[in-house]
Image (tube, rainbow, N blue to C red; front, side, top):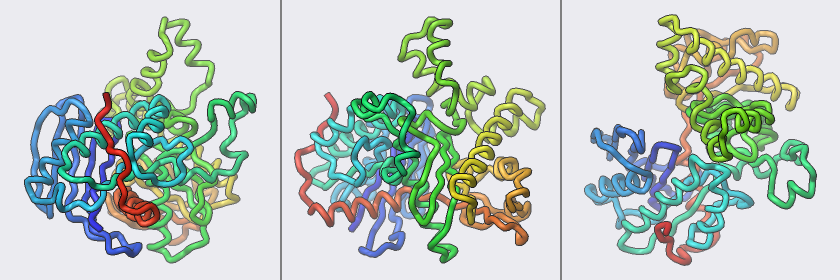
Length: 408
C-alpha cells in the first residue's frame, strides 16, 4: 500500500509518501517535503526521490500549502493515481482513541475540539479538505490522533482536581499530546536495544515540547494536558503557570478570553522570555553574545525539563533511559548537555563526545559508566501515521464514507 502522510504543524505542512509491504518495518520512503513559515515569508523545500526543489514563496494558509505540495507530487506522477490511502495527523482526538476514516461527519465532530488545540486542529482539517479537492478519484482518508497514545493514562494521572460533575460534563481530563512522537521514540528505542520491558522518559522537544513517562510501551503520564498548552516551556507557549495568572492579566491588561489565549499560546514561552525569538539556535547564539534574556530563557527551558525528569523518576521508581527527540532534542547538543547537567546523582552520565557527534540521527549519548542510558531518536511520525492508516483500513475496509469537503 502506498500512503500519503500529511502532517500539519502550527505553521507548517509536511508530507511523506511511503510504500508499506504489510509488515511492521518502516517501509520505503518514496517522497518527502514540507512548507514552513505559513502566513509569513515561507521557505519551501520539497524532496522527491532524493531530488531537492527549493523555493521561496509566500503561502497564506495550510490549505494553500497542501495544494502546493500536491502539485509537486502531481508533477512527478505520484498524485493522485499513485496514492492508495491518505493519513492525516490530528492533534486532538477528543474521545477518539483509535485512527478513524475521515468523513464530513467525523471532521465535524473533531472540529468541535479545535478550540482545545487552536494552533493545530483547524489547520489539519483545512489541509485535509484541500488535498481531497485535488483528488480525481476517491481515496480513503484516515485521521490519526496525537492523543491516542495517552488514552490509557491511569485515572489518577488523567484526573484534574475539579468538581467531578463539571469535569465529566465537559470532558475535562488530561488527554496528552505528541503521542505519535512519544510512541515512535519508545518503539524505536526498543528496536535498537532489543529491550522490551523498560521504563523510559521520552522528551519531544521542538517548537512544542512535552515529556512522557513510558513503562513497557505504555504511557503512564505526560506533561501536556487538556490542551497542548500545559507542561514544559515551549517556543511560544508558556507551559505550566499559576492558574490565577490568566484572570489577573485579563483584569490588569484589559484582555478578553481570546486575548489571554493568544498571549499564552503565541507570545509566551521562549519568545516571551527572550523578547526576540523562539528559535533555539538563535537563542544560543544570542546567549553566547552575552544577551541576558536569551540566557535566562534557555536556563528556564532546561531547568523545567530536568525538573520533569526528576518527577518521572519518582513516578516510575527509576528509568532505564532518557530519550531525546524533536527538532531541538535531536539537533541541539548544548541543550541536551544543559538538561543532563548535574544529574549524576541518579546515575545519568553524559558522554560529551557521543553527544557532540549525534545530531539528527539515532544514537546513545550516555557514557559507559552511566547507570541510566541517554539516547537521541530521530522521530519519524510519518511511519507511525502510515502504519496506523493501513491498519485502520484493514479493519474497516476501503470505503471512504461521505466525501470530505472544504470548510464552509
